[in-house]
Length: 155
Image 1 (tube, rainbow, N blue to C red):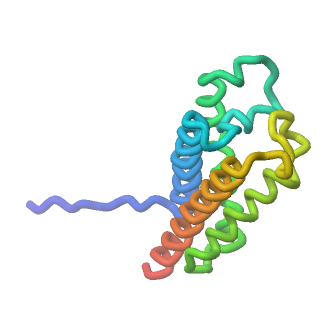
Image 2: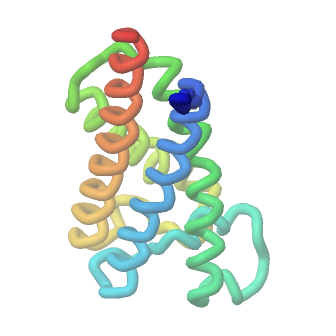
């Protein structure tokens, strides 16, 4: 008797959820290392600034909680990409998405982050490093979702 193996496929929404979560986890960890080694002046705990009080958010525990929060928020960012650009099978859409996210955080949402100076007052290392991180994050999210969409269409 031959065993039949039935491969359970994850839904596209589950894949987008995983892409978002791990994209946020990976790139916020890279951001934490950039913060730790002084390439950037703000770490992942920046995400906690509008919501959490206390000095603990400036410690490494705050950075770790920030990484967790960014990982969860990244799921929504991934679904937004899916909604807007899933059919665009190009790396450049992800690059542009990352740049737009950077502009949103550092320009539009800047007032709700009390620990974040305006872009004009940030040092060049922080600006360049953060732009690079956001571009890599956007590329990861965008290309992964577009690839999964193309795979789903082929089935």
